[in-house]
Image 1 (cartoon, rainbow, N blue to C red):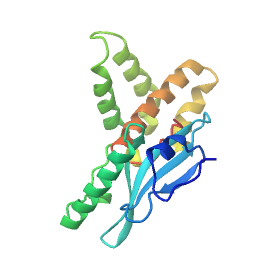
Image 2 (cartoon, rainbow, N blue to C red; image 1 turned 90 degrees about the horizontal axis):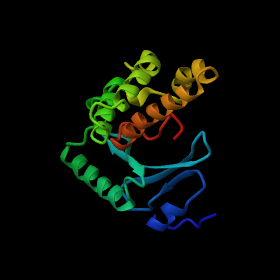
Image 3 (tube, helix red, strand yellow; image 1 turned 120 degrees about the horizontal axis):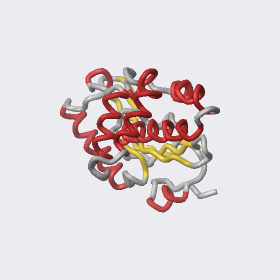
Image 4 (cartoon, helix red, strand yellow; image 1 turned 180 degrees about the vertical axis):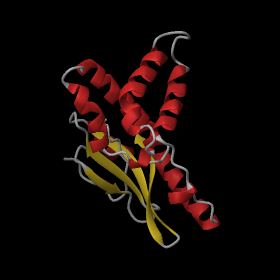
Length: 192
């Protein structure tokens, strides 16, 4: 077990294997590292900031480690504190949370830049998401999708179409990783 420091360090963040919430100490602006075990047994690490806005405590997602480093997460915390002091911090209902369908379109557009033009990748992504995920998740805001919702998509096809179910889960996971990185949620309900 890695010894927990008073303040988080890049070495500790990389080494920690115990699920939990690890604060960055006093004066950190509410920064925490969230460590969770995924369905596959891997560890998922993400950043969150606990901050008071209009007298209420809010949890803001800051992104997924290692895509967002400790230094980047600290910088985002400072920017959020400055924005809050100016009255510019957008949280809760003021911020429009995209639906799963809108987020999926964004993720497909991001991935499409690396795909061969006219290839099957985009068509495959759209087909699997449109036929399996969109009927149950398409109109739901990404911050309101739970693991149970993802399971409701996967269970009907898991035994008969295992390869397709795996692709659907991976693609739902990619959309949810994007939602975590954008700060719309703190975890990935697809278990990645």
